[in-house]
Length: 227
Image (cartoon, rainbow, N blue to C red; front, side, top):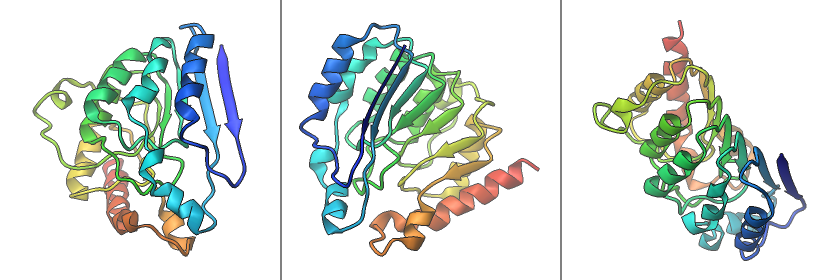
């Protein structure tokens, strides 16, 4: 069973509508739902649009997502246009544990949100640990070095199905170490996608553009590791 809702146009979604919409969906569909896709196309063409991307009222916490945890058979989950910056690693672990059959996961990376994510590299580890069937991941997170000898990293099996990762507007510290961590988790990973084109062509480049070069350095490492 598949659920797909689409919103398009120059206006961003109204954040006041989303919690009620998600509750309605969770009440109308059975736990056997396998594909869930919310499509809210957000454009950035003027100052008002840019202000929306920095507006904290658009950032949803775990309480908004929680009603969907009952869909334990999800294989495809796309909530990519919504700002997920208020969701932390602990909440994200609960999400990953609730959807062990995930194959495609897109979560908050499709728009150029300028609210830094609360998720860290540990959140990404939780996702890979609890969802071993994943082959597509699209999500922003704070890519900082972690202790690879401690849980959850140390007890997470590498996923060799993931060859591309999209991180949107993710901040990064110490790109070489982050690249090593990614390679341990996803040994076949060839490239990390991010919003480099946006920084190049938009006249309103956001502050997170400073991480462009660091993600390029990560990609250089990953490609060299495949040789």
